Length: 183
Image (cartoon, rainbow, N blue to C red):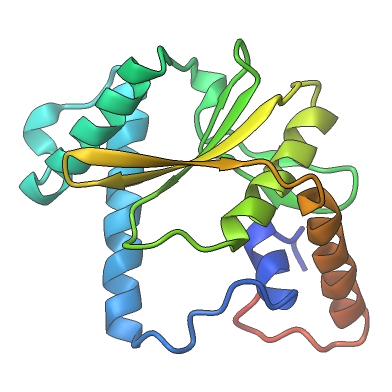
């Protein structure tokens, strides 16, 4: 079995569960979120062909650009969706890390932001810090059509909650109790 991802660990720990969302709606939301993430990623890298961006995504891309301008942020290639592996046996890919500002960002496009993002970013902070990157602040940026909202993530217990989920994941794995959809 591969090294588990942060989201798989949070699912095994019961912090992420979208079973109540109809499959077609969830698939559309995931596809849209992935498209917005790709547009922001390519834009940050300076390789986005704006003519290829679907009109439904443009307002979200503009929101990201406004956020970056408002917070004076730009990113190098290794600060954008870079995969890290932990010494603790998990892997994850933070959306953005500003090494200069010690800022870890998670981008969301849904209509709401779930509390699991607190724990998700704490896991990414563990990964970053194990790789020599000092994180001073974690934030979630919720992108909406032509606006954004910031969620500062400051709870000091978030790391220990994630590590508890990792222990649950490892327990379930040892005892063959993992839901096949989790891994």
